[in-house]
Image (tube, one colour):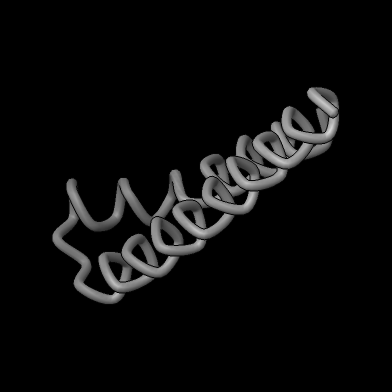
Length: 60
């Protein structure tokens, strides 16, 4: 569950920047949102690979 907590923490850390960008049109916050979303994408891919590897190891 630690990986799930990483995802939740990352998403929650972006909440303020989402608000600043969408509600206050803060362009710098938009840059931080884009970086955070890229980090989320990378984390999600790492988790996908980890899950696949664990599934493959169990099948052996």
